[in-house]
Length: 267
Image (tube, rainbow, N blue to C red; front, side, top):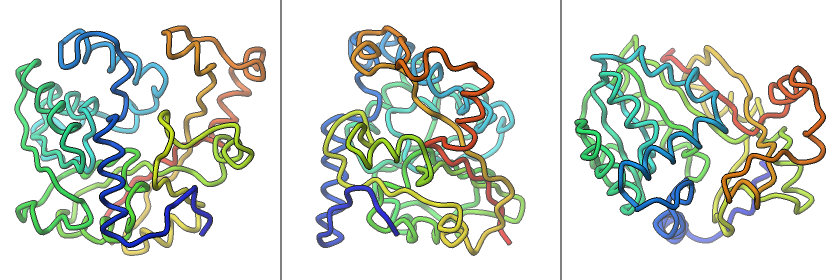
């Protein structure tokens, strides 16, 4: 398997490196310059996230989970989490990064929402998450950062019933971004130094989820904007995308998108 810049050291050091990386700069924390943890901060983070990744809304289908039990593996700073809660889900989130999960808890306080939160390594899920069944297990851009993604996947069955669904996003090997990374014109994450960011082909996804039935497998998301301008809140497209017709760009995303969107059921 061709892995992106994965550091080959022992497993515990790998986990500590991943934790340290996301504690230092939680995902999307720089999407706002407003006061950290304020309503204005969270509103701006959410707005920017869903503007550049609008496929999240269709993929999650937040409204579908009202009064249902949702488990999110890797809640980050809670952008998806707060939307599940707002739409009436009984939400549980787990997270490896203490700084990230504390911001999610703060977010729930700010919006007066309820949820259950667990700090821990998803590779050892059964050691800290009480036995129960969820209607949805959701994980967006998380499992591919694990030193042992298979251990997380194996745990999913333990928390699913016969009608449960899992919705998982993994980075795509056959993607525009991965090809740019290969020639050093891009990097897996916004911040440099991500210790583990695995990518997956269709075959590798089928192998990873061989104990499940894959009900849907699609690609989405090519980030078309100039990074420096984007950091300043300006959405200016790269020259090679600027004059591309929307129809062509949308087709390119479906073929070479960075995000592989996977829906799973128990066999």
